[in-house]
Image (cartoon, rainbow, N blue to C red; front, side):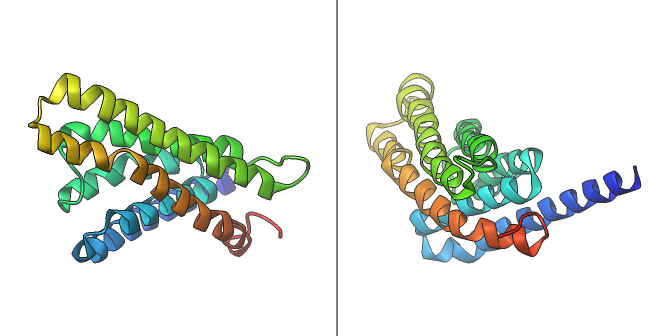
Length: 184
């Protein structure tokens, strides 16, 4: 029981550190005004959180991330945050359920499958949720603003999820080894 409590405290602490890192990096990257860099780093942190701390931590970071982005003026409208959180959650859940497995006895194969599956799922959730449902049905935005937001939540989301996932693919084994969660 004592060890279980210690592990829980460690997981909560690591989650808090990852959220703090998310805040610091988003603030530091804000002057660049480059959503491809910021989005890739956010996706990397989402994946690191789920792969090193577990599903609940990953989902926590997934939900907090778009709120932080909006508070920094990086994210779009407040009404889109549930859709962004859902896209983040899709990425996290698939990395959790696919990336923590072995395919043919090889963890890297599972992580490779997670990389592509999760990136496409996040893209699909954001594209359908925001571009095909929220913008035309709920928001009633001027055409120019709708086009800008639609562009933000299409192919760039796939690119940032793939980029963050690629970095995670190489970092996760090292991170897990460093924190004692995995050998080799």
